[in-house]
Structure formats: structure tokens, C-alpha cells
Image 1 (cartoon, rainbow, N blue to C red):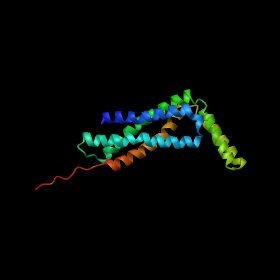
Image 2 (cartoon, helix red, strand yellow):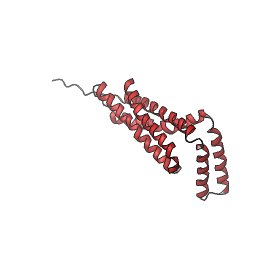
Image 3 (cartoon, rainbow, N blue to C red):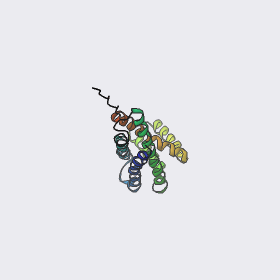
Image 4 (cartoon, rainbow, N blue to C red):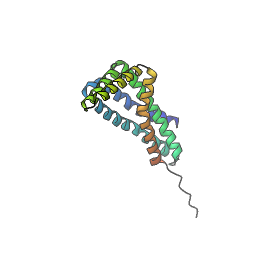
Length: 176
């Protein structure tokens, strides 16, 4: 099982690393909302390796049978390893290629709120919240936790789906 987690977790994680460095390189080419669409699409693509890893394990190492619990455990471990790649690559890209990310994100969010026709009180509240966000984003622990919270729930969901889809009980033996 360890080999499957390492192989498929690293394959999945490599998708995240490529995405993050492309994001850092071309971040001015799209707005924040498109970035979220690209990000979640990439997560689904990367976490497709959860299905591949669970199926490979079931077919090659367990004789074609696999319980829901074991499939979920395997998917979760692949997702966790892959999420570590996501977080690590974001930390590198954020530090080297997007050092002003928090400021740019906060400014874009306040502008979007103002453009939506929000009242001055709502805009002031949003501005205050974004100033708090920028302060918290200076803390690396906060950045790591928030980045994990961005990616890991998607991995957990896909692990659940994979476990349901790929579980297979042993066939009852037929005696004559």
C-alpha cells in the first residue's frame, strides 16, 4: 500500500506543482475568479490519481477485492501526500513569484464588493476584513493551514467517491 500511496500521491502532487508554477508565471493573465476555476479544475484533475491508485491497488495487490474502508484509507493517504505538494509549491510560488498576493487579493475583493453596488457600510466592513486577512496572511502557519483547507476537502470528497466506486467484495464461492 505504501508504494501506491507514494507513486500516485507524487503523480497527483506533480500536477499541483506544475499548476502552481504556471499560476505564478502567468498570474497577470487572468482574474481571481478565473484563478479559482482553474484551481478547482486542477484539483479534480490531480485527484483523479486517487482513482487510479485505488484501482491499481485493488486489481494488483488484493486479488480484485477491496473494502470501502481500505479504499478510503488509501485514497485519503494519496490525497494527503498530494495536498502536501500543493501547499509546499504554493509556499514557494507565494514567496518567490507572488509576494504581493495578499494585497492583490484583498484589493480585488474590495473592488468587487464596491462594483456590486454595495453600500458604503458594507464596503467599509469588507475593507476592514481584508486588512485583517492581510495581517493574518503574514503568519506562515496561517498560510499553511488555509492552503490545506483549500485543497484537502476536495481530496477527501474524491477519496470518498473513489472508495464507493471501487470497493468490491469477494465473490461468494460456489460449491457444487
